[in-house]
Image 1: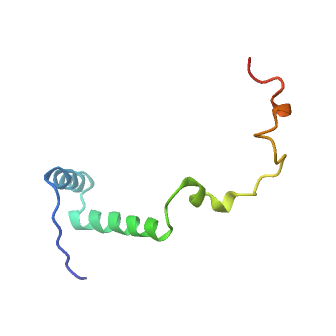
Image 2 (image 1 turned 45 degrees about the vertical axis):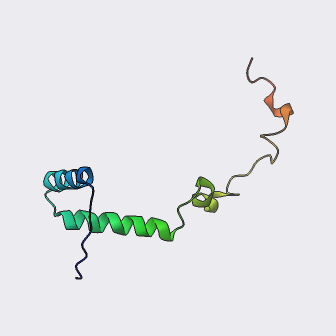
Length: 78
């Protein structure tokens, strides 16, 4: 395993140390897991909600103009 050093702001280092103590894990292990999750999300292009939900587009059938046709709003609201 390669060694990489980094500089952390004091508050972030304190939070990391406290988490390591609570979870009984090394700071290195926590940083590795966090970095892996971050890089995985970046690889997916974690951008907008629409980007993340693109596989859901078109999975529901129904009226295409439901959100813009006032005819369907009869009986709703005041």
